[in-house]
Amino acid sequence: MRFKKFVTDYTFKQVIVENGRKKTITDYIGPAFVFSAEPEKLHRSKMICAVLAACCVAAVLVPLLVISPIIHCWYAMVPLILALIAVLNLSMCVGRALTVKSWVTRKQKDRITERLAPWSLVLIILSALSAIGQVVYYSISDHSPKDIPVTIATAVLLAASVSLFCVRDFFAMKETEAK
Image 1 (cartoon, rainbow, N blue to C red):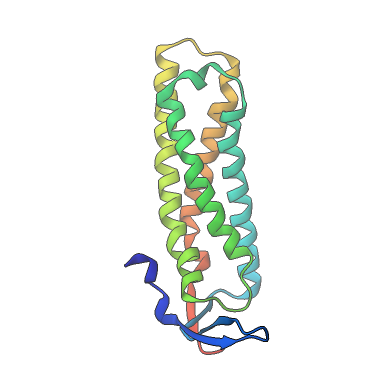
Image 2: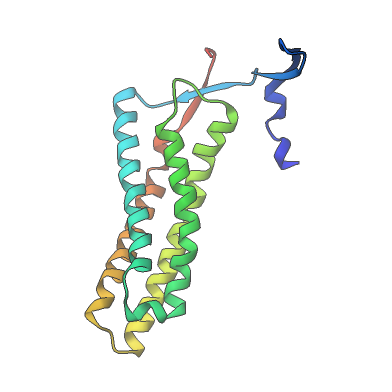
């Protein structure tokens, strides 16, 4: 089962606390991981990914906050609305990578390295679909200058998601002995 994927990495002990209640204490016994990159390169990589994730958040919110005629075009806006899910998950992956201490558990490694590439790929697909929808919208209807922020935001979203997909190896990890 998926939800018991990492249960073998922990030991569980029942102890009795001072008021007579039982308390379960968990100890991590699984493998520990650290980032493969040198600290200077890793810090720079984290900052690059943080800026790219912030660009994605801003780019997906601009079309939803700007009043523009293109927002009534469902085939251009539905992919951007669905991109909110991908941006949220992508931001969580980058946020976890930014807050990592010296070593991580296998569950944390999975949530950082194994999810960054798929979510950025989903974001590439959704922003490309929105860009195609906007091209179709521009070709069949009259567009106004109010549509420009949405188009620019979609282009920024596509560029940032492609960049995040290309830098996915920045967070490569290796197993370590020390915990």
